[in-house]
Image 1 (cartoon, rainbow, N blue to C red):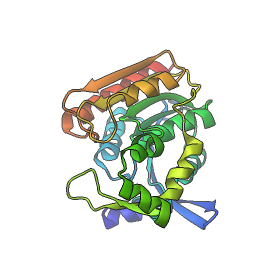
Image 2 (image 1 turned 180 degrees about the horizontal axis):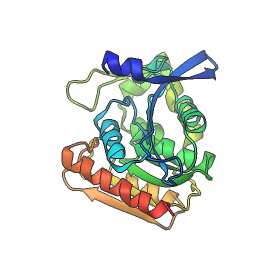
Image 3 (image 1 turned 120 degrees about the vertical axis):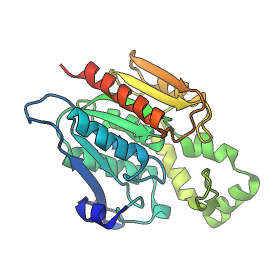
Length: 267
C-alpha cells in the first residue's frame, strides 16, 4: 500500500482482550443520491490478504462505474490494521468484520467474500440477517483450519503445533514467505465452524470456484451450498481458474455476478 493510500485510509477503534485495535478501512460513497435504494457492496478479504489486493481494487473501480457504495477493510494483523497476524483468530477477525458492518455501513448490504472472507460473509448472515441481502462467494473456505488445513499437515507439523504451539506454513503461492499458524488459531476456529450444520439465509447466492484451485478443493463450494438454506444458489466452476481468480477475465466475471445479485435484491 502506498503512503498516499495509507494516509487516506480511515481507522475504526475496537476494544479487544489485548487492548485497542485499529481497523483500517475505506468507505467509497459512489451513489449519486442518498435516496437511491441500491445496496452497499462490502468486500471481505481472504486469509493473509489485504484491501489493496486485485479483487478489492477491481471492485472499487467497478462500484464507482456502477454508482454503488463500497467498503473494503483490513482485519487485525492484515494490511495496515494494527496487530500481529500470528495472534489473530477467526473470532477476532469476525469481530473486526462485524464492527465495520455496524459502524461504517448503513442499510442493505451485498457481501463479496473471498476464501476466508466467504466464511466471514456466511457468519454475518447469521449475525445481521436483516441487513445482508445477497452473497457473492469466491472460493469460499468456511471451516478451513480444521477441515482443510489440519488433515493435510504431516506429523512433524502437527507435533510442532502440539508441543510448541506454532508451525510455520510454507506459502501456497510462489515468491511468498512462510507464515505462522498457531494451535490457538486452529482450536478457536472450531467454535465458528458452519458446514456441519445449516446457515439460515434466504437471499440470492452466487459461488465462483476455480477448477484449478490449489487451496480449496472442488467439492467445498457444494458443501457451502448444502449448508445455506437459500433456494437461490448458483455454483459457477471456472475452467483453469486458480484460488485467486484475479485475472482480467475472472475479475470481469466477478463484476457481472455482483450486478446480477444487485439486480435481484434492489426493488
